[in-house]
Image: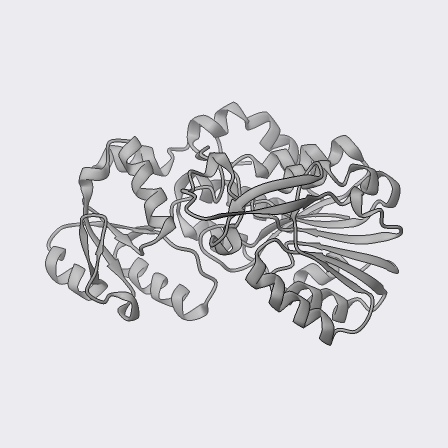
Length: 360
């Protein structure tokens, strides 16, 4: 791998050049990036916050009046400012707008973890270099090695050129999953049912499915979706973890419903929700498991240990929620079984979301 602990990370670069910064976007992502800038003593460099034209309105974000990009250029056009993108999207029109700004300005999409407070800095990479190299060396094909190397470089630098180099077609995964056998599909983080539809339609041999989704509004849509797909689908409104029980979560956090202590999410209204494990579901003949559980992937793998040992299911596991996911998830799976072939794919999205390991 060319990525190394000697490569300057984004925060070091911003500290070195100390140029004005304009934040593109408001919301949780911008809150997190402002927090990191404060940590590095860079908050004073922020001169503006701008939003896409349809989201400007007459409002403030922190102490900044939200303006449009064109207003930002008019106001600070003579200053060589850097743009930091503070949101995530896979929508083509949004990505085109980001690309347009990048063609005009120096632009980065900082990698800040969805959960946890560990930044993927040069120091973090250096401390975990051996683990990262081990995962790279376990990759099964050139596409996976290319994806992994560019993904690591993106996480260090915030340069989306690396993400573009890591991209693959969303349907590329069907080639990886072609050997799915008859049995049960376990969909962890089933959302509205989009992945139920995708995989049950693509692999008719999956004759049974269990879909788990904690967020109550998404779960309502999930159950409606499942009814259209026929019998054999069980929907469970619960979190997925390493143990069974209950947990207090935010009542209004959307997909980020889990109130993990390390996420610094302020709880205003909470509800109790069940925690299930894959093993507690006592399923036979599990053929395929998809893990996308908002930062709880390692715990969910732990809670699926006996199922993985017994059934050796093919697995797709999201690896972008926490900085350590890029090596810890592989380590966790190989502790349970070391006979998997490992692949990685990233589909078009900013920041480095929609990035997954495949265990075949």
